[in-house]
Length: 315
Image (tube, rainbow, N blue to C red; front, side):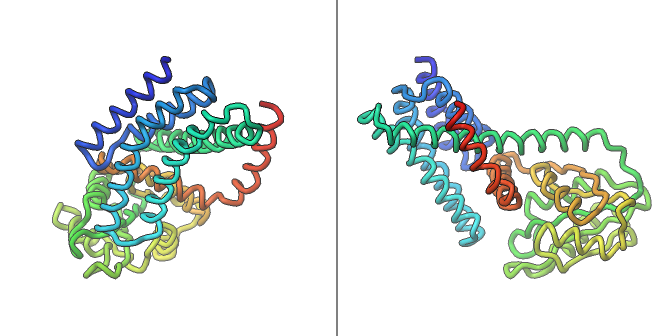
């Protein structure tokens, strides 16, 4: 009963949130938590059906609104299509599955499917929580850093209206200006996209100059198109070894992946977080989780079947 009420309140909260804002920070996380609590405590409860009915419709509408808006503003990128597809299928599946389960509660096939579904949800939630814990760890560590005059790089992330810094990129450059020390060299790293009239690095330099950073303390890296290339090209440009600290300024949600690439490149990366638009935080963190799943796909291909077998036989 309590779980059922919790699902109803979650659904109402999610719907109200979507009516007032296209992007949201907490509802997606609340739904994940409610799902895992329900599956653990009441795997065959009608509360699941009630929750699915209440949550699915606003969840689908909300995710589709996000996906459609991103497609309109950014085009048919692989991530935008992936987001819409996974969000829709992932929301519709529980509704169809739980409805069928209510009519075949004791069927062997459905029992096995339920265990599989429980495991997949548990695996995803735990992996997502791992990313969240990493995110909070690096943010806390960033607060403790005492910035010196060692080189700094600001990672680009796209322009708005072809020449202007996007809100996210502007916050990254503002963060770099905040952290900047006397005589410290800042590398503005970002290439030029097909929908941009100038490289991101150049636009970032213009903004920093307009806000008081001396021109001799700014250099531009304008050939990179990915986070990995940002760091690789900066390493080559500065001739960095694995001992010299490199301060990496990026959005808080993006820091874990940036530092992951830094370790791959044998850079002594020190993360400095920049604020990010609050309405984008949940969506961008989801994107980072997807990116980490792809980066660690070999580990997942090994661990997933091992844990699945253990789950079937020991739980």
